[in-house]
Structure formats: structure tokens, C-alpha cells
Amino acid sequence: MLNIHIQHRWDLNEEEATSLQKELANQVITQDQLPDVQYIAGVDVAYSEHTDQLIAAVVVLDAFTLEVIESVTVKDSVQFPYLPGLFSFRELPPVIKALQQLEHEPQLIVCDSQGLAHPRRFGLACHLGVLLNIPAIGCGKTRLVGEYTEPDRLRGFSSALVDEEQQIGSVLRTQTDVKPVFVSVGHRISLETANKWILRLTPRYRLPETTRMADQLVRKRMTEQHL
Image (tube, rainbow, N blue to C red; front, side, top):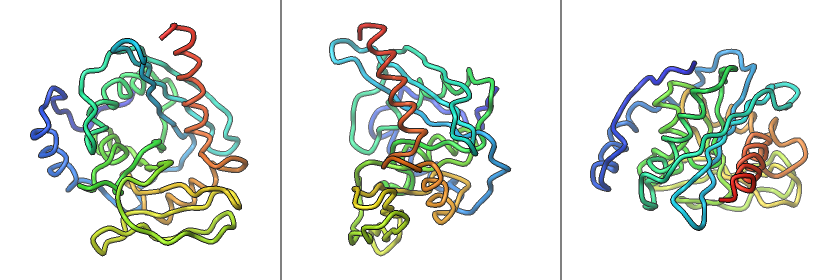
């Protein structure tokens, strides 16, 4: 079972949550500290349009075949309001519940969100990585912060995502002539290595298989639960 490396309260107001982000951001490690990666997890959360219910999902993929080894879903209720820049306080409590039910412990987690590419350099991927002390990557569909020039149209090319004269991520083309994704360090991984993993996880589609599989699973569960 996954251990929670750092515990903190979740019932915070906006000011407290922002302050905690700034404090924990100092613990993010941006160099490679990955063990041998056998299993990679993807996480996702879907929300009911009609109630305060949500479904959190975790899928674990074999790092080499990209086959789904295990999946877990958790039904929960929303505990934190939607506030820009504080997304992780809304999503992580149910995600961590799901991760703690895994039988196969991942050595790397890929989040459909930001890592360092965040106004306070502490997006969801950083928050999750630091709390669990597990290597994590943020791979967002859209930009939250920063400026960039469009990368070359071919798969594998990238350009720097820059904010306040600091590179906070990469704008990575995972498929030729398809919109890029926004990759940033979550924890215990370098940006160069994060880009390599995202390319490994995108053999056919724009988004990593971790994200695609977790998204499909939450949609299926939402339908089954009539949420």
C-alpha cells in the first residue's frame, strides 16, 4: 500500500491553501530520482453535473507494453470549491483514496494537469508527487501559465514554456501535425526525462495512454452510476 509521505489538512480556505502551496513548493525535486519503472499510473476525476458526487480513477499500466495491469475507482463527494490555481485541493483527496487501494505500486504517476507550470510552481502533479514522495509528471491539454513559440510540426519536437524568464515546462508535439501537450516536472524527475516518458506513452494518440485509460474509466463509471 502506498504510504503518504506528508500529511496535511484538506479543509482549508483559499488563503491557507495558497500558503501551503508556497510552503510545499520548496520540496519539489526537479532532478531524476526514479527507481526502475515497471508500473506507471494515470489518474483522473469526473464530476456529476447534477450532484456533488464525483468519481476518481487510477489506472496502472505496464511501462513496456502499456497494457492496463490494474484499475481502481472511488466514488466520493466534492469537498473543496473550484478555485483557479487550487485544483489539487479539490481532486487529490479522492485520487489518493484510489491510489491507496492499488495492489501494484507505481514508480511513476502521470497527471492530466500541471506540475511546475503553475503560478506558484506547485500544480497538481507536484502536490501529488511531494505528498506520496513518488516521481510525477504533469501533462496538460492546455496551458495554465507561461509563453511559448509553437514547436516544429513533427512528433518529438518541443519548445520551452517560459514564465518570468524561467523555463517551467515543455510544449511537446506527441503526434505530427497534432496540437502539442504541456509537460512539466511534478516531482523527482527532470524535464528532459519527463518529455521522454510522455513520448513513450503516446505511441498513437496525442494524449498519454495513462490519461486516455483513466479518462475512459471514469466516464464508464459515471454512466454506470447514473451520475
